[in-house]
Length: 313
Image (cartoon, rainbow, N blue to C red; front, side):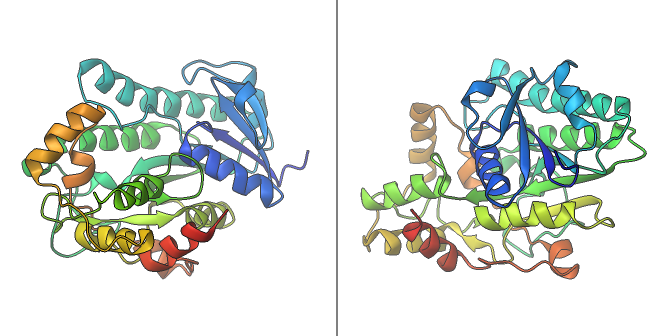
């Protein structure tokens, strides 16, 4: 196996992991998927891990081109005590054990990309946040827990001493792609049902990214030996919730959609076992470093992204 093509992917069974594994496989890479369910891996070779302890999987890091960690319990749930613990610990423990495995490797990978989230930035209806943007929670957005998780996650990555491996924190926005379970699939279904109106007033911003550009950006960062630190993974043009829903109604051929007030969202979140923060927080984020360093987006605007996803098989 060529050391230039072997990519270690932790957390490859979720939407982003499946998306990236498929892209890597289709572009001549050799993804090694660290998973609790290695038998379910389709694109690449599955290796069992528990996300907490060292095991035979650690030997796969030898001579790998990169390690990418997307592991973590889904945030699409109710934030009761048990789920809060799972969300936080799944991220911290997987990050720490990967750091330990990298330190023990005789030929460690030259780069480690660790997931983070654009939710770390402060709720804003004003100027967009680049990588130097303000971090913190806003009571109206009910995002205190999410910001706490994001800051602890990045601190865990920063604390891992891996002198021969550069570290990159991926502050990723909402990714839209063709894999089952994508948010675009959900929004298009709502629009077709006549429920594609603006949510909680619609003024809040949505940062997003087409799945192809998500994968391309990761590949681009792997190939740049000077890339390290924090990168925002998002398209350069965030939109308001009202505009996003209008575009999905247009794509669905349903010009009218029932708007959802804040109290309606609260009831719906309870029924769907999720949290309103995923909708009401205004995430206005731009990929300053990617743009300044020369990365080009295939889908820089949401109309282009939605049009492509609608027609993609």
